[in-house]
Length: 114
Image 1: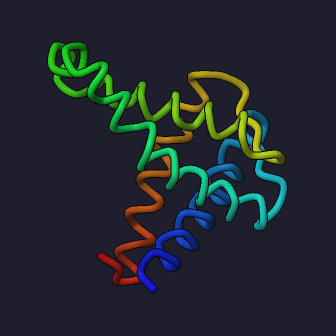
Image 2: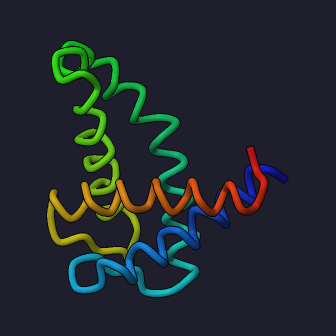
């Protein structure tokens, strides 16, 4: 049950973030946002740990700031995989990932999920 709530919260956060970044980021509808949330969850479980391990020295040198770049890469990869989700470039993907993380955190706090 917790996973379903987290996916729903991520879908709402993706819709709201896309609304805030309207010209550069587009999510067609809530179904696309749900698929995006599932794909992001899958990419965060499979691809992100591999990228973190491969870029560990760079992450150490940049004091962890390179993790933002990894998040942007994950968003760009999701944009390639999910039809109906579009991001105009790397910087918009970076901004999308930061804003979505903040909104996701606030909504998770309001929902009371861990």
